[in-house]
Image (cartoon, rainbow, N blue to C red; front, top):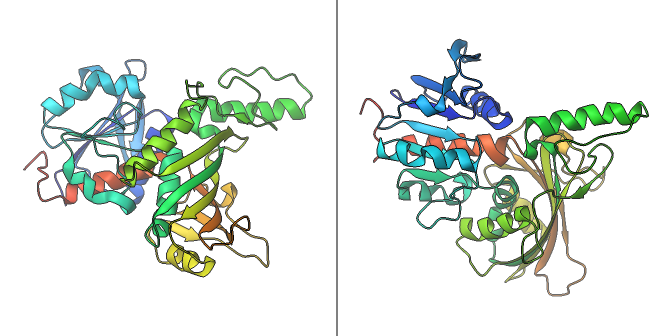
Length: 344
């Protein structure tokens, strides 16, 4: 493949940097790369695939027909250039919350509903990081039997709040060990050697914004508006992998053996389930890899109908939870028969 013009919006951020890593590692066919950021970063240099590039001002960039735009600079930023890019014929893969739940905007996990890419009108949404990690892990099980209800507890890393939050975790750990008093700046509470309810605002239903996102987005990705979901999101002192404990209620009986086999044979996930060694998914193992780790698969002993399982999952928030999924969507876009490259 050739002729692909690609822009990365928010290229200086944590997700933007990992987008470049994923593009290079997966040999995405880039003929023209435009690293875009705010005017503050314009003029700085970066290296991609052995070549030096100059970061350009997003506000001055001229989008073109067939250009693929990977955006990770925040919802308010996407809103400023959406119409300009789409009217020019570009296709936006947006890693923000701006348009995920908008009618007519596909919300895509390639391993789950990759066919939805073809239904875009210039914009494809990349899901919330927890929803992405959750749905890629659950989809092989959902195919065994429709899931009726989920009860989820998350253990979310600092990376979900950006590079500054990761730096705050690292610096606070040193300060605590040195006996110094910690003054949080990015997070509302100390993150080193601590955990707290996710820092998203509490909404009228008593759930915070992060929790409500996971509920709404999981239903949309699975095309199952009746899926019952209860969730508690927690921020933990881990750098970049999110983990989730999930209780699953199925419509039909599903055995542990069936679930393990489904995970073994599914794309995007890896079974880590060694009861003898008490070895199950951990952030330290999911950091930096593409697969979501799935394990601790066991029967829900509070039930006697065989329709309940418990699982534990861990996935890199910056990769499958954000950058990798966006790049995978872009790969789907350029494979579509209706896609026209900048040369086409």
